[in-house]
Length: 320
Ligand code: SD4
Image (cartoon, rainbow, N blue to C red; front, side):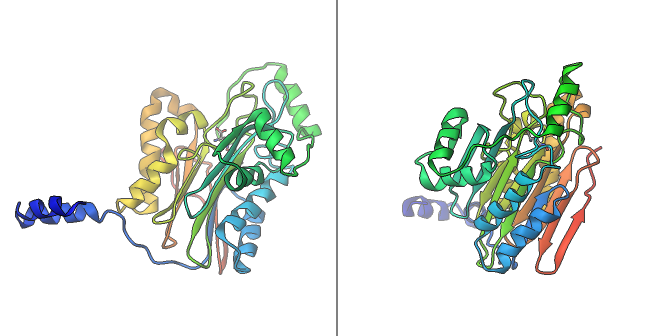
């Protein structure tokens, strides 16, 4: 605020001045909490991998990358990386993004034949002048950065796609065929927070479809002054409310992470109108002081928390 504006405000009397001051102080200062990880869904191995990094004093960013890579390589996870269910043309296309404590961001969308989109997103952030790379260009960049092409379509996801082709009806089922996108947030020993989100998106989507997960502000948002949030569920609905950014801003204004997740879910549900019975949206949030929250529209959502004492799987209450 300019000095002159400040003096004219003081002339307005103490009540106005108090108001002006409180407006200036909306960013609260949170004390650090020690290491902490929170991730969407039941992902103990991913959280272990992130904790292992944090216990060795690695940065939150390294922990996030390591944790997300575990799910990307897990063939039993049909919503992330290798083994992810394909689009309706039988091609696996991946979306991921990452954000560090300085507010830097990198993202890849519609990436094919590369096993670790979270690591490519990090390279976009660190080694390119851009934030998002898409499709062929993202793949070309990945190859230039030393990543190798690999077939992401496993026998079982190919078989599931062929079965789907018998009816070819596109109707994502809540928490069933699209339940394992990993969004992860972490605080390191230095008290800094980073986050990542990686997915193969909705099964049998149209070719070229991109969801919320790689979109900064929707699938993930980090502000090292406040905390972070990340999403899972129906990307089309989460995108329209920029859900993760909303949660971080609500925390900035003083809401607890739990309240902030609930408010974001309520807004998405309200906008969804009648459609809400057919889609899931869930969030987790982590504040700088280690406080956490998680909430979803429908039952079935859970999330994993890890810290120096161990891991816990939490099943939050839901809107319906
Ligand atoms: C998407 N949000 O592509 C992702 C899907 C998801 O658990 O979260 N699945 O819309």
